[in-house]
Length: 214
Image 1 (cartoon, rainbow, N blue to C red):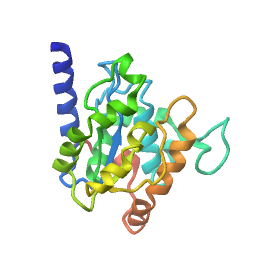
Image 2 (cartoon, rainbow, N blue to C red):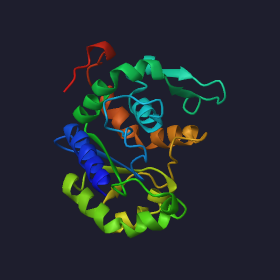
Image 3 (tube, rainbow, N blue to C red):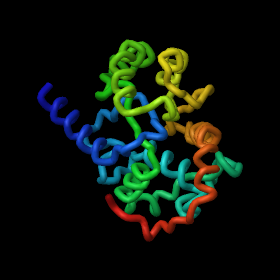
Image 4 (cartoon, helix red, strand yellow):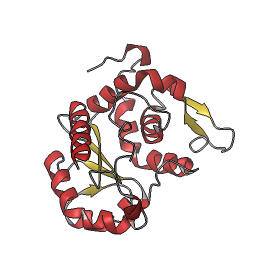
């Protein structure tokens, strides 16, 4: 239990460092990784940073074309373009700062790693935790905040969250980007992020090499 408490506080501090003053887009994933060295908001890049890579790629691939490369397995202008890890990897801190600047924030439906047993019935575990999730979402969002649910177990909360007043913007499931599900994630994110792309169109172009740390 002591190690879990230490990990929880470490994750909280990392997450708070990059929390926007105003959360415009709230991404809700299932749970933190079981490996204590891995987390979306840790500045040390991991080779298993699939969620981070795909989120950055989905949001910024048009503004920074160099972070996108063609997939050899999947075709198409959306599904067939994947993150260029070599470009994203050394700039993880700067991309975290960019997410903060642009109002993006990510939390987990269950704010701790799931046990092996819980993973077998993760939908129920996530549902049982909805009161805690609602409390955390309410504390950092407004009625204007767009909420993106990631992974089937979290997407199953859509109706409950909408009834509670949250602005969930994906009426369809967005799968977690691992085990060949990346194309589904890219297409789903592309659809829900259209308002963001439209908003960025009229703003000054930023350069990847000029991004500041925060």
